[in-house]
Image 1: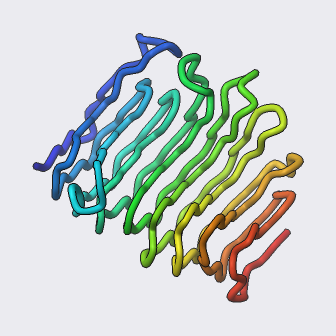
Image 2: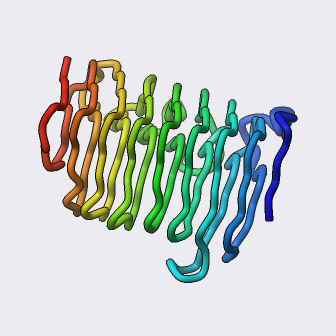
Image 3: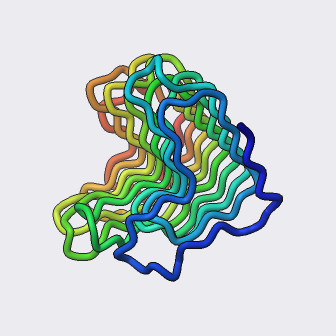
Length: 221
């Protein structure tokens, strides 16, 4: 299935910060393409879900704009999917759920390439994190060429530009990450994995690399 919006808008802003609506949803499907969509004001802009690594995959989410979604810009769970060239702006603020905010979330072996994520803000008073790009159970693919800025947590929690959880042998390269120097902020965090970071431009974070393998040529300001 291919959904090409031809740059038209799919709008949910009228529902406000209590919305639990999803802009585009699928469960346990293969080879879905979503492109040229302007998706605004949903709890999840796109949610392609999977019950297992083998029940979904091959998706292509490319050249979309996500603006003002209240929890997650886009979430893709499916082996061998690609998230490329999307623009994700001003995510967060939901008054339902736990208040954490995510620009892009992928699970299983997916490539996240050349996206712009700007403004990911955990809900005020939630004490939750704001995360630009999160990968989970991604054992062999790449998070390359992305631009992330304006990622902030709330209270004791922190902002993370790129967060890898249980993701081994990942290549994290050529990303441009700009932080706020907030206490606890991390540019690239690797938890329970062995991801390698190389040739990233990192500016304004309390910690540049958290538990990631430093493969060199990372520039830290």
